[in-house]
Amino acid sequence: MTRSDRKKDHIQYALSTGMPSWNSLDDIRFVHNSLPETSVSEIDVSVIIGGLSLSSPFIINAMTGGGGSETEYINRSLALAAAETGAAMAVGSQMGAVIDEQERYTFETVRANYPNGRVFANLGSELTPEHAVKAVEMLEADALQIHLNVIQELVMPEGDRDFRGAVDRIQQTVQALDIPVIVKETGFGMSAENIKVLEHTGAAIVDVGGHGGTNFSRIENQRREQHLSFFDEWGISTASSIAEAASVRHTLSITGSGGIRNGVEAAKAIALGADAAALAGTVLSALKSGGQKQAEAFLHQCMDELKMVMAATGASTISELKRVPVVVEGRTKEWLTERGIDTTSYSRRMIDR
Image (cartoon, rainbow, N blue to C red):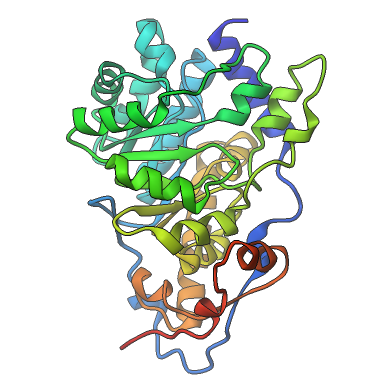
């Protein structure tokens, strides 16, 4: 099977496998504020992550590219939706286009249709600094995502089996580029220990990619004769990953991702310590069901929901949203308690004004 055919399979299976009904962000509850002293019209959702200023904390996360006209259509439509809503946008892995220039157009369409927006390039951890430079130039990118997909590769029939040297390659890439490097998990979460290591590489942003969204174990198991089903429930949830990252980071910015379905869950991710929230599967589903306009409408709805939650909690800025009290319940509380993270630090805080 060619790389291009595999990209098309991933889109098909991502849509058919869907998302689990339970999301770890269901365990997060805002403490109601009867006296918020806010106005929706004065809510400021601008953020700075990894030194990049964004007009909103929403990112259309890496999905596809390198699969011919079908993936070009997806990237072009998402870029147009991003341009209408101000969301940043990441592309899927560009390694195929770095190797085969005939696939470049499936990625270049993003910058062509979003000339003034924040666009993130993307490569896997097998990259070299030379690959990174080519990927960034292809998009005139504002940042480079390096995705970590160990579980996907293990389940993928033709996947990699050797994961040595990734940390060194990330560090070398950071040194080779003059734009921020984002290190991104692809659906199985990040631990506090991972965050400490990545901070030392000089990476600017981590995208925790928690368990609870698009499940690449399930996707790749659809392509196997003998399923490795034990990996389907593997990983650290999105809520737990954000809290783990927030508990140890010093300079790193955090993007919360992994099954975020709406603006309310984006607000919860930020309240747990994320600086931005990334969506992929839900945006793709909107695009597939109603085209670019429906993708735009979904993103606008997420923005409206975020502002409503901020107004309800008394947060006028994203920084203040990160200080509103939330109660952590259920499986997320159990996990964080076992991991030595005090959840009362979330429930007993307040906005300082």
